[in-house]
Length: 286
Image 1 (cartoon, rainbow, N blue to C red):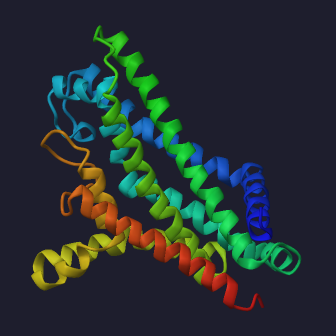
Image 2: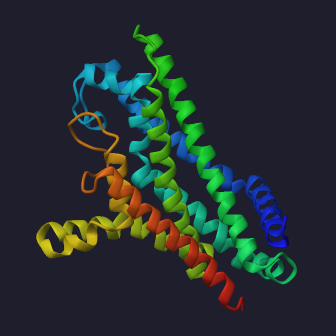
């Protein structure tokens, strides 16, 4: 094992330990799990049980609502909130993970005494990637358990989703959240602080991209740019998981194909990761 590999491995262990012992880390991840269950299952189940079609259920008939609540629908349902709300939370986590190192002065200590800037930041980014994979798998298992409980309660057959469909859902969720986490890390490196990074990231995810896509609907020539925005790719990849017509979750789109979305997301992840490492390696810490 080369010294570079040893340094990177040590950085991954150290950063993973830091993340696990950081209360903000668990708050962000727990918030996403709660929001996922609330919007994907609680509101729809309450609408189903009440027999009424309200705004929370998009005015859908009861049989369609029930179809969204059973285990077979989990790969589609659990990815729909990732494009905007889940992505926004993971962007916050990435921005805090990198930006807080500047605010607390820990990057200065690590870069002067540790294994080198690229290895230190690379260890953090890989630790965040592992976090994304674990979070996506955990959300899938939790949703599957809740959906199975609802199916049993309502006398429905507990039919698990097909393996290929489940793997596709896990891949979709990992790709979307990885891109937004890497984006947050990059913004944290640009801003060199957590507060500004979080603010800029949330404004971009929740406001700027939606405004740009709205303008593109009026000025057609702008679509060439808006179709390649990170939120468009993430929303289109989530949209590719949909199996029925009707109102989509905010942020879920059908602009790009699944293949195009994956390519665009991969490009953005590469840019954000390379940009984060380059900025932290080249700039002074003062």
